[in-house]
Each structure stands twice: as structure tokens, then as C-alpha cells.
Image (cartoon, rainbow, N blue to C red; front, side, top):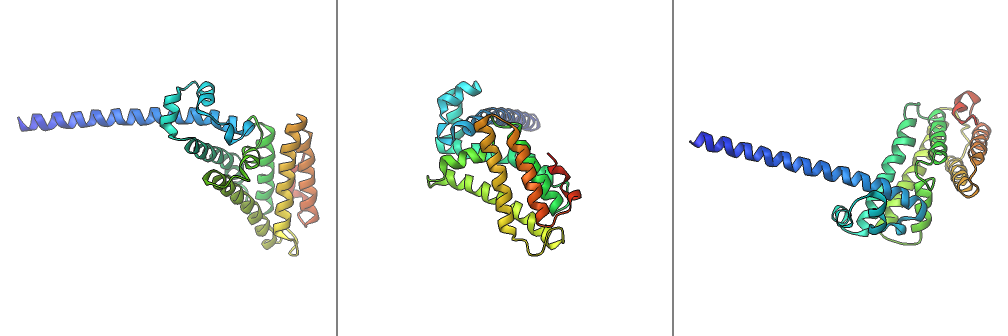
Length: 229
């Protein structure tokens, strides 16, 4: 009898575990669906433009479901930044890591960044360009999250410039901080001007300017083919 009771308890525990796993998977799926809409909305209207009501309409989820998933507007904003950062990293940084550190990886990063904006992964172009303008003068956890993502991006670009200098792919006298700043600025200007003018031409202009700036710093053309317009 005790064996039967124990077996029954074990089966009940397994069933509860399966039910819990199912709820978690459904919750994860709901969260992904909501965040797909949230990142797109924020790329156009900023993080302050996110409301539970608007998100419910865009995602097809109930207001109460969204409120349960994120608990507060700030929780929703932070989750949205984190989701956008995952996409940014996957499409720009991770794809570039197939190239060796230095000029080749730097060129891949810049090409990927231009394509990410040009292809409108988010309706509003670069998510972080849009949201940085929205939160740059609003201290708090949301601004900190956006700033951290951008500081890491800027730092990674600069790191590739430094690797290139150390490897002799760029002139030893090149100013890594200045060069990285200029390259990122060209990318950001292409994003901004393309959105305003509804024209893809700025991406070709930026790629050409990036290529010429790196050549002026000592890079050989063969290492810059990814920036051919």
C-alpha cells in the first residue's frame, strides 16, 4: 500500500511539474511576443511612449497579462531595453566575431551596424539612437540601461581599433578614441539622416567615409572590403 501511495504521489508531483513547465513556457512566449511589439514602438516613440494599453493593442495580449509579466512601466522599459540589446548584439557584434580582431572585425561591425539600421530591424531605425534621445536627461535605471548598452558598444568599437593598431593594421600614431568616435558618429548620422529623408543613400555615403577614414589611418583596402558601398 505504501508503494502505491508513494507512486501516486510521485505521479502527482510529475504532473504538477509538467503543468508548471507549461505555464513557464507560455509565459516566456507571451513575454517574447509583447517585447517584439515593445521594442518596435520604443524605436519610434521612445521608451516613454510605451503604455500597457498601447502594447496590449499592438501585441494582441490583455492589459492584465502584460501588467503581470512586467509589474510596472519601469519594469517594461527595462525589459524592452534588454530585449533590444540582445538583438543588437546578435545582429552586429556576434556576426562580426567570425572575423579576426582588428581591422577586419572593425569593418564587419560597421557594415553590420549600417545594415541593422538600413534594414529597419526596428521601424524607427537604431533602437538605441532613438531611446538615447528620449532618456538622456532623465536619470534613473532606464537611462542607466541605455547608457550601459551604448558605452559597451562604443568601447567594443574602440577595442577593435586598438587591436588593429597593436597588430600593425593601422598606424601606430592613430588616436584610437578619436577614430572610434568618428566611425560611430558616421553610423549614427547615416541612421538619423536616412530616417528623416526616407532615403538609403546615407548608408552608402557613411560606408565610403568609414572606408576612407580607415585608409587614411593606414588600413589596406583588402581588409576593408565589407565597407565597399
